[in-house]
Length: 182
Image 1: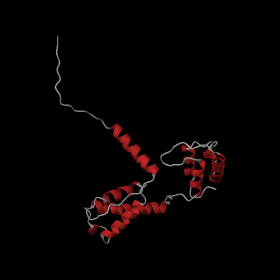
Image 2: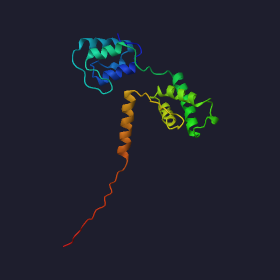
Image 3: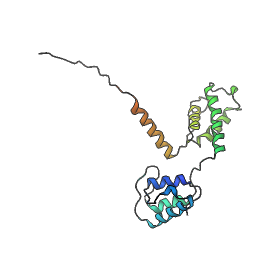
Image 4: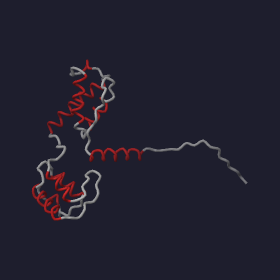
């Protein structure tokens, strides 16, 4: 059976990227979707299409993944708002010239610990921004690694590529050009 930590949205996403043949999956309840997905994956021996986000080759691999708890359980509304509030406090510290005097923090070690906590929730843009700015602080020796899910990494990469394609580009060359008129 599929683990309960996978949301209906997660299941619909997996159905879409692996092209599982379920008729009108949006109209099914989460429980019915889980049952139908499990039936299809158990009966199917064909290899799955390649997807860089999830590296599953067979339906059995995907089913084993779905039986375990979802790796990064999303935060609920209150926890997410608490993380954003904490990130805003860290951003205030960074934007006030990295001075502890204007913040509620006691010392640099406390700020570093809060930065590590925020880095675990790198899918939230405010947390990512706070950790990136905190890494620019000269008082912090070891830089904090931000944990971002593959899906968000792909979205960020696509966003950056779209942004680059919208910019006008020009090429400047210095060379001698000869024009002759007959």
